[in-house]
View 1: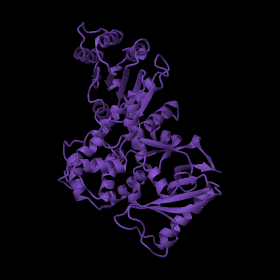
View 2: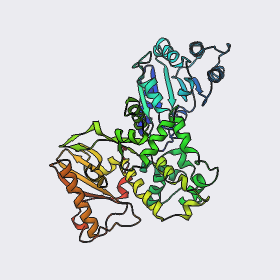
View 3: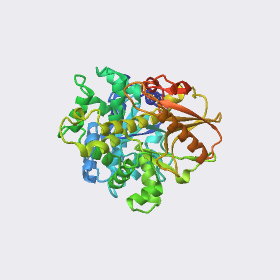
View 4: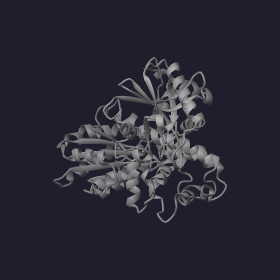
Length: 477
């Protein structure tokens, strides 16, 4: 078993428990494209599978059956090519029955959604295979894996047919947090200062494959030009590939994401429907739910009289690579665009918003820095209904009846609070407490990369979080 991983401690712990469970296990592994699902499973089991196969992207039923049959042959099958999926899984059972092994029988099916072509009966056949053969074998570990998160949830994890409640474990593989990103970059010989690692994260997120493209002999700006802005670069078409891998019909999802990108603080479902000129119906609700499950957007509810208003919740784009792409894809003029436009208003404005999202993705690190590990909290953003320009980046509402009202500012050095900034923050806090009718105490809290410049306004700040706090080795929310 290979254990030389960066991060993934929780997932490895789960896999160890699965190996030692002494019973048949049916594992669903899901997560976005390029997040490392295949690498995790292949490396953990050292590619020692009783049977291993992978679906063909956009393949026909015949092509999928051919690929499955080739994998059967590799596992020892000598019969003819199955004509349907029931026959294919019957052949798999017969082949595995003939294998002699004292250890676990690990069956690995990668890119599972690809096999489910129209009217193929694949999922029903998989359910029949599990119910009539695999679940009866204590040695079996059946692992199915896919990037199409919504498909995996609807058809496998929450299946209402033959696979209902059959999954024994689920592993949702998320992107690295900043701590894991720093470890990964160091493992590849990249020893950049943390400010630069944050900037990398703001562009690429914590997606291992994206990070693997970085060249330790080049600066961050040179790298971004090489892997994104240069003609035919590795990530120049990644945006559409990402959504095509997540959803069989990506266009409606792209429209939602691009609409949310124009409204940085989020929109309600009704606002999204109005902008797209579509009904505010169950279809839109399901699409929003799918995007939330894929960690592309987040849903949050503001409060009135201390009660969350979920019926009028906001949706906000939080995927960092999507935010970066939608901000700059139409501005590309040269292969060295990023190097030529550093410190321009466009990049500076994007930096501020991207840093807010980085902070949202590291809420547990912020809680720890504020000493709130043992206190129940809820966190959300806030946008005034009376004055939509009046917004608060992050609100942390605590069970001890205090509220950390967070102002998030991105800067290259200590942040200076002047008189105008101090007054603006005080007015925002007052507006929030008044409009939401919240009687709890509001405490101004600043989140900045390097802390605050000491002056007459900073001395009154009781809570301040810096970039160093975001690198704590804690689980992200």
